[in-house]
Amino acid sequence: MGFGERSLTYGGLADAAGVVARRIRRGDRVAVWATPEMETVVAVVGVLLAGAAAVPLNPRSGEKELAHIVSDSAPSLVLAAPGARLPPALGDLERVDVDAGSGAGAGAGEGVPHPELPGDAPALIVYTSGTTGPPKGAVLPRRALTRTLDALADAWQWTEADVLVHGLPLFHVHGLVLGVLGPLRRGGSVRHLGRFSTEGVTRALADGATMLFGVPTMYHRIAETLPGDPELAKALGGARLLVSGSAALPVHDHERIAAATGRRVIERYGMTETLMNTSVRADGEARAGTVGVPLPGVELRLVEEDGSEIGARDGETVGEIQVRGPNLFTEYLNRPDATAAAFTADGWFRTGDMAVREPDGYVRIVGRKATDLIKSGGYKIGAGEIENALLEHPGVREAAVTGEPDADLGERIVAWIVPADPENPPGVEELAGHVARRLAPHKRPRVVRHLAVLPRNDMGKIMKRSLTDV
Ligand code: MCA
Ligand code: AMP
Image (cartoon, rainbow, N blue to C red; front, top):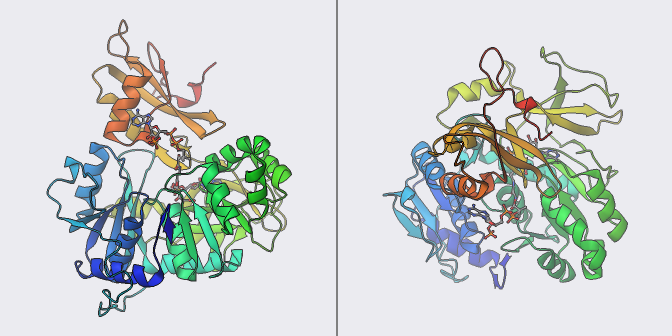
């Protein structure tokens, strides 16, 4: 495992994580200050070794978001890299510094009990946005992690010989489960870039990495860079597998990358709550614009509005994707209402994603049920939580948030504001800073538009579909 110049062997990881595990009680919830560094991996592995559940925290979370996550998940302590500055919102939580070098393969982790745990014991609690209100904690059992990673190994012919490179954040499923626990489960290697850059990708692939994981924004930036960067084209051309996920990769970017490198990016489709559902297989046809076929163990169906199943595989009939399988979360922490609403009576999870199926079973996602969910840079962001944050600004009387198409981010967040003082409306910098400080920088509006009134229907509900820049 490598982060920049630093690296850790399996023996070193076992030792350092063993030292962490000794500080943790089985069954507890433990917060992890998830900076893109080695210490985050040691911390998460230590928590899992101890039989506890890790709650990864975005180190850029604002006060309000952090306060919510900490009070909702009630962790017994927070693990952090030495020297990391923790904000006041973490309050009185006991802090334990993680020493990634402890023992350094000398056996310091020996003697740590490896509890036998049932598959439904919680492993991770990952916070994810809904359409309204604060993010919900998806409780991911140990079984979901192992089953999804083994299914991906089958689909991607992923082995211990693979060296994965990526620059994904470590507080979401993509970077943490697929990007870190994935290579560890295979006994392979991972090189984390610290932060994504096309130079970092070139260097790692030229130096023997075999797989690249990224969100569409990263592949878009690669596609933009390729024409002037033959080294990048060569490096990508030599990779075994280029995988995109977390949002749709536009066909234009697929085609530009294929033309410049001779390699096709494959897409997989997942969700925080379900881990991975489908993928284009390494031995299958990489068809741009599709997310492939259901992974081993995953049942997938499309349903009509009334819940009836769509049997047709005509590439035309659109329905909501529902899934069932060992890859699913068990519940939203402290939210039995939301958990119940997320499942049908017979245990299918309602994804809210709309899709068609091709005659050969390939799934093509065509949209989303909720207009109040925005995918920007691969992050899922609820319009409601941004509206609430905006309404806490003294210069804002009314607010509505929408997502607009953006070539780089997929969608960009747009705030429609009725200012408290029309003579002196708050600008984009002011409101972006306000939201970034309270929630997180990726949730900040990129565009602010001022209106005299918000368009509402007879019921008083804001008509978001009429909020377009025309
Ligand atoms: C700008 N910045 C600010 C402000 N404005 N900070 C505070 N206040 C402000 N007002 C800072 C940002 O923090 C950042 O800092 C820099 O300016 C640029 O920000 P931005 O343009 O937003 O982003 P970016 O740095 O260009 O990042 C693009 C990205 C990122 C790398 C693609 O969006 C990303 O990492 N996305 C990955 C999302 C992901 O992993 N999703 C998985 C969830 P600085 O320059 O210091 O960084 S989905 C999932 O897990 C499911 C299961 C699935 O299917 O995968
Ligand atoms: P999150 O809640 O952040 O885990 O994001 C899950 C959502 O990301 C899914 O419900 C989809 O809308 C979207 N998503 C993930 N992978 C893909 C993909 N390959 N193509 C299109 N959408 C995707």
